Image 1 (cartoon, rainbow over the protein chains, first blue to last red):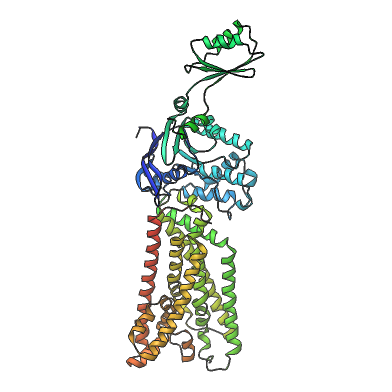
Image 2: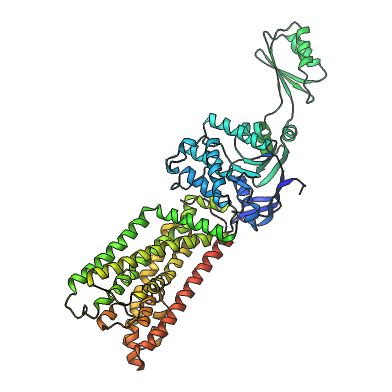
Length: 312
Length: 299
């Protein structure tokens, strides 16, 4: 375990009957990281999270949160953890204010601290107007927002969220994305399980990919993109594609191949280097009229799909 | 925050959860209504009979307090305990609670104390109502200094079926199933108990005697009335027969000893039997919670 490791997952194995949900997975999450945990349905994401929270007992291996195993000592390990479950079912007999207050009590906050924190959080998640209303009257998106507020009630050091923006409208999603980024800047460690790869790529510093109970990749997001990038491609849109332009581009030593798609050229590069300057010069030399020139590296989605196919 | 504080937080939570359920409130109202009806019927239809003599009238509070105990208090105990653990699994809220800094034993203790203290409050209400109604219908009551002890005895006696339902609530994690099984055991136990008493009456075989005392309903039904007989002298056999353990007069005749000796003996046995059942059921519930995963939303 690194000196700054906040979450340490070591050789975790979990069976449901004969089904192996987790197969000796290991990864660490350091302080201040925003760790995106990716994988298809049934890959073992939620199982990992539930073991991290002490809700499930691992068959082998262990999890440590801030150096303490939550199954063995939930009082100390979960004191500084906030958790927002996927599609939460909250206690509908409470109002939003009452539930936040109750959760504050569970963390041992004083009455004064709870009073301040509750309304601050309701405001933060955009539910101030709904604080006095029963949760039974909330929409799914509002329950999701309240769930994030509940996860923040103890001002946690570690925030564990399972699909936190699911069911939220685009405006709320953007708001929460910015909230998570700000929390990360405050030094909080954020662990997000998500299907929204675009979202993960925007806010996460590190990613872990799990498939069929096994970790496929765990590391900085740049590394995963690099590791799963096979080729960079420059897409050039011309007013008119001529044979001389294509043949001259093919002769360049850094070009592997050129494919013509209407008035577009897909120029495959031999190395992962941005060669757009050289390519545009060559096109001008051949009197081509360039309309646009884009470099395609790889998206997290591409990397994710390649990882799942066993590309790495 | 210490263990006691965490247990108290869950206890308070359990109160709010249980009281938010309309079925629990309806049962409390029904229990008081039935109690009122029973005492009204006694006052109207037993006046001037062998049962309701002038000597008995000052003790009618006992009937008011004990009459509901056999059926409604056990039923409310089963309903409150049956939902205590299971509903959290069914609704998926167990995840939210158990992912907080609290041990599973603290959580279970808070849930148990919350449900049981609510049951105690209901019983306190029916006890007070019983005493008030008895005074209202039958005039000044005697031996009221024993009311608190009787209340505690009733509460203690409900432990068997409260713990049984609580155990099924945790073990099965299904509210309706837990309540139905506990209720089926209550009914079956009552029927079997009656059969064993009759078999003992006919054959005199002690096997039936001991078996009938080992049945859960014996301890839960007769512990309060045995205590009442230990504490007070009731001047009416007809009245006593209503609440008495039927084996005591049979046994007294057979062994040629006074009923008082047998009452004391039976009281001790009942206290031990209630404790044994309650401890076993709670230990099973604790074992289940400690050794198993927290299941996701089941309903």
